[in-house]
Image 1 (cartoon, one colour):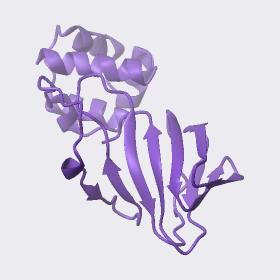
Image 2 (cartoon, helix red, strand yellow):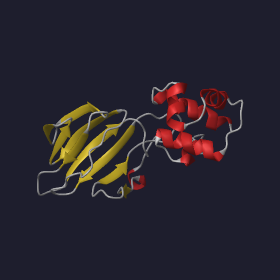
Image 3 (cartoon, helix red, strand yellow):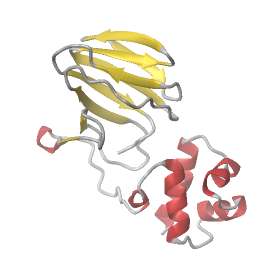
Length: 180
């Protein structure tokens, strides 16, 4: 149970939130959250779910153990996946260890793909285009990024990407906070 308390505190600090701000996001009192972080109170699953939702992490995040750190990600372990509602393909490139703050991904955009959603969230994003061309719309301004070029921006600015060419475009993406 102690690991859960440490993970709550670690997430709060990673998101640069005060206990008061976390209290506002969860509806849990500041004193209760303080006790949770110190490990001096038990934590109901409903309260843990509110905390997980505030950090946009699955509740299982608090139960994962990283005692067997895995720093290397072999090619055969890299499995492509898609997020519902998106035609982008993602491959996780991150190692597994406690306190990880970066989320490295290989992202492939389908020919002519445009994201329907505009995103804005805490953190920052870095992309290096490996193949093709990607247009990044960041805070209403378009940036054309070609193979061999990169872009780095704060994620709190409204942003989306599109692939303007008739071939797949791929990019190395490194972002914060950890999302997968």
